[in-house]
Image 1 (spheres, rainbow, N blue to C red):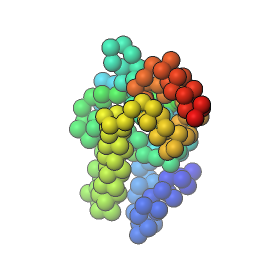
Image 2 (image 1 turned 135 degrees about the horizontal axis):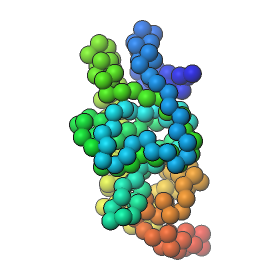
Image 3 (image 1 turned 30 degrees about the vertical axis):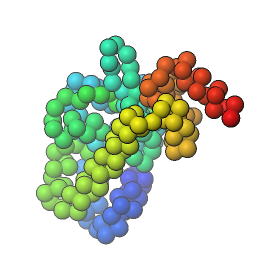
Length: 192
């Protein structure tokens, strides 16, 4: 039942003991979300971190009545509205299932328990926080330093899965252009 997440933990922390793993496994819950379901809603406090066992999710914000996609995550990744989870304040973004998804969930209280009782999880928490920081930093740099064409090309080279699983209008908002502009970028790149 928890094969993927178990492999994930033991890959990141090969020295994890069976007792430490069992302490985590006892606190994990499984939730199934149907395509279109919201896992976290903007304005609500995020109370869990999620390991994506299967499915595909997107982050988005509503700005001036428009949905702006800010990220996409697939299987074998941790996801959360992490700032809300850590600060216990309302989330600034939505997390939605783009496909049916099975998530392994760990609550804030259970994470704090694991941090106190099993120091190895403090290290794991740091590794996850560092990965999220790198992801956010790369996204910010792409928005600030790359043209829309370069952002799209970067997706082709590094996130081709997103191109196959995300509707064009969501992809366009993620890149920071209109769907029509994205069509022009795609045509131009195909002509190279």
